[in-house]
Image 1 (cartoon, rainbow, N blue to C red):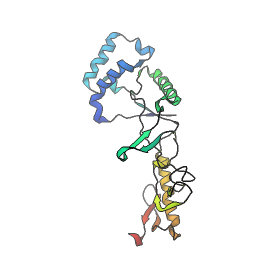
Image 2 (cartoon, helix red, strand yellow):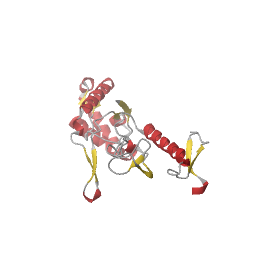
Image 3 (cartoon, rainbow, N blue to C red):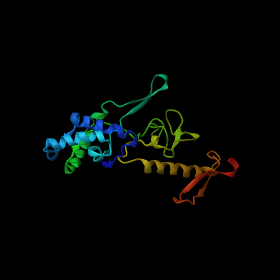
Image 4 (cartoon, rainbow, N blue to C red):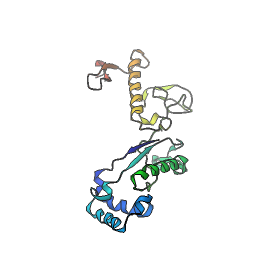
Amino acid sequence: MVIQEGAIPGAIAPFMPAVMAVANVLVGLWQPAAKRQPVKIQLRRWLRCLRGAYRGAVRSTQTLLVVAHDGAAGVMRLGPNDRLRVEWPGVARQPVYDMIDKSLREVTAPLKGAYLRNPVNLVDVHPLGGCRMADSADRGVVDHEGRVFQGQAGTHAYPGLYVADGSVIPRSLGVNPLLTVSALALIGAKTLCAYRADSERSHGWARRHGTGPLACDQLCASESTR
């Protein structure tokens, strides 16, 4: 489990005082030290809500995000009119979310604050899977090089058809997937270059060493394909 700071977009700042005040009344869990504060202080907090998000309690609010492992049991299907639907019964009732909730309460206690649980329970900002990597077509969509399988079984892949993004990751990672996705893309790029001499897999790609601050290999079209 990784607990991170979450920044609230400034565009919704005008709405935050009212939203947080109502949520505090409905689902807020005050720590003992905060609950004993005089009524005068509590009233002053409510009045500060009228002064905007950059004063008072909202200014002192810490948004927490958690990245952890889940069951990775969701299924994506095409519904009517080819609309994508995600089916994941009981996703919000997985034990991991109770463990996360307990940990965030413990983080809140030393700050003597009120813990507000996300009212919609789950927010997914790093969707993974959909074209999962596997050993064969009956278990996934792409092989270890990102090549798309042909048919419903076997390991034969379509020539020149690759997937190199978060959709090929076959499970939850427990961390932000940026570096994992970047590594998969780099491996795919190097694979394309390595196959340049293979007549069956030639795509007209060449590799050159970058000169920028990252100094990484860059993929570029050869003179014959520009």
